[in-house]
Length: 462
Ligand code: AMP
Ligand code: ZN
Image 1 (tube, protein in one colour):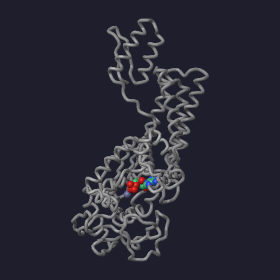
Image 2 (spheres, protein in one colour):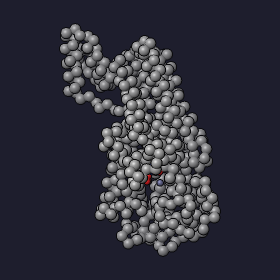
Image 3 (cartoon, protein in one colour):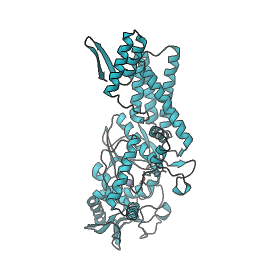
Image 4 (cartoon, helix red, strand yellow):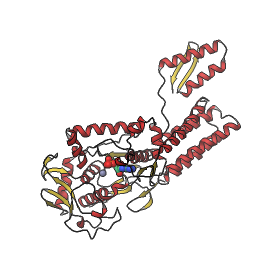
């Protein structure tokens, strides 16, 4: 059974969703004010891995990830670039989705944009107002943290001494200056705003996620994810707003991946160690190596991102791919032997045990390499027969459905297949059966099966 570290209880807990067999999963999406950097992608790759593992574990998953397309930074940058907020954020949303696809991050089931959910946010703020959790000041609406005794439960801080009525308007701030936070920001000259029943203005960042998560997943749901920097204030504030509005527990499991750092230092533009995915691809690194490196360290540990680490990641993937290719060349000839099938079951069990242990990816990768080593050792003793070789490939592909680190081979074109068949026929004519068999096995490794009939050679895609 899967165990997950829950920030709320600060312990590893057995994962039991609210509804058996189904997982309602929310992840804070990107703030689309610029290209996402490689640190952001550590968090997004982890979330993708968690989702894929839940699906692999036979849960029905509904994954919602929002797009933060209105906040202090998006408004500022859109203004600087002379574009409308919508056009500006659409450009960076597209860039984010394109980068995600390169990293084999599956799109969420539902991807709501904040600016399409202003009425839901207004309704939530109104309900908080009616229940007496808020106050108004100069057209803005604030949440009064002293009204919610649970405030600080997630970030493990005691805010009972926080000065009542001290307010903060910015979206991001530290524990040290915990204040009443803004739910609705009064209209400001030159800023985007919406005319609503609670006055003209725009939402604060925190209310966006409460409104969108509860709209699509219900008042209580299973998992909420985001990088550690979101624990305070973002997620602390989400809990306060949501639980005060509904009277229900908001989220069961809070899961927070640690930060990525670069060569031992915090990533920042001024230090010149700030990378987007695009920067790394332009330097010639492969998306698979980047994904591999991002998921190779357990998510609760900081990840030190180095060029050397990328090179090692590339060679680890190469080892796996060489193995798969070699095994594929043996062809595919029926069921594996019972003994080999038992080896695969053992390897699968070890992989699952590692992943069930709070998504311990480094241990999970080690089980994959142990398996490859074991098969290679057997192979040197006596060559692995086609049936076992095919089962080994199938097993690695099964695991790759979760990890997504093996390069996907482009499908062979029909013309290429015809050329190979011709070459095989020619080899047979000159009685070079070894060459003919090699071509047949190679085509099989590419998912093309040949059938020799009286009318000639037929082929089909497997
Ligand atoms: P943002 O676009 O700033 O809202 O961030 C998107 C996601 O990236 C959030 O879940 C952040 O917590 C996460 N994040 C930001 N910086 C890093 C970093 N250096 N390492 C890992 N995750 C990060
Ligand atoms: Zn959020």
